[in-house]
Image (cartoon, rainbow, N blue to C red; front, side, top):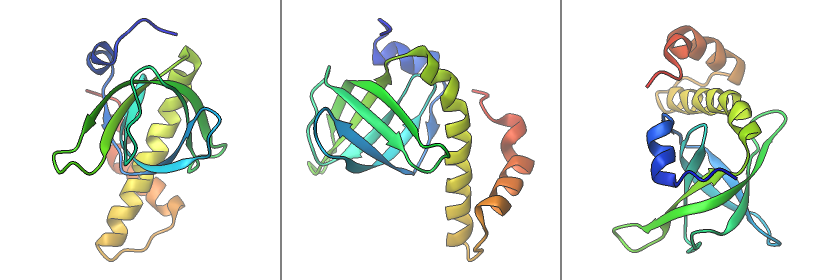
Length: 145
């Protein structure tokens, strides 16, 4: 596992805001579905109603990619929401191979967000159509800070 703290990770990687549900697996427990807040090569953050202490090892799964993204991670920080109803939790991936795989996951998540936005605007397009449009509009600038 890297010795970087989550604060170091925040400075090292560009964090992509994402609104995609993920599955969070605390060790030996069933999955909790949680909305992901953002995603970077080093980790991600998500929202939950459950307090998860720093240092806890989790597994996260993003079922919207094929094959589904599944990676071990460690909780680096958590903070309560101002309304007192839940927490935002930041995790760091535990291995370097994950950073390589996450690039494709980031693109798929952005395309899913684009598809959802188009639906809100009254355009129901397939994932394939959303992919082609998103790539044409945004792929050239993807990953630039």
